[in-house]
Length: 189
Picture (cartoon, one colour):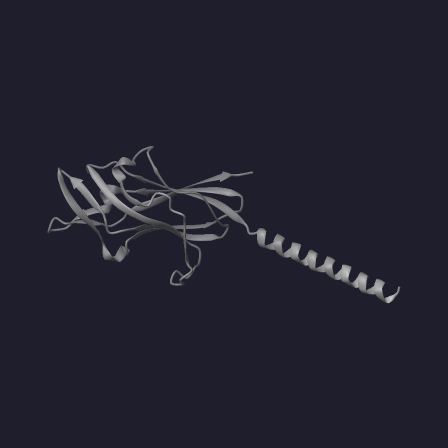
């Protein structure tokens, strides 16, 4: 081989090597294992005429150390705002997260984050509902579930309305969220 052919061969080899390594990096970055998540909220039957809760967010805890700033993964909550939970009982649910793609990781907890604009109506009287301070404006349920890629996980958070609303001696309404989370698993493929 003469010098120009050696140089040409070297350049083509280098170009092929760079192209191959770029393809490999793209394949690695696109091979993140994901699951799909739906989150719904339902209330139980109650004697209350209305229970308005301000829903701000739904989060999954993906790290064991919940004090780590990255421990909670905030989901794309599509129905934030104030909702009358008494409208969502029985087969009526409110969808909070709809087909959100999340990493297929171990999930420790699910958290419903609530705001301060909460009220209820009982016997024709409206009450402002304060969340008990120890709940830090959220309701947390233990999941302890390893998510598997290419699966759809549907979580239904069931709020026991009558167990969650308490009246103190001053006749003030307090919210002490009592929830259960039901999970359904669907195969996508």
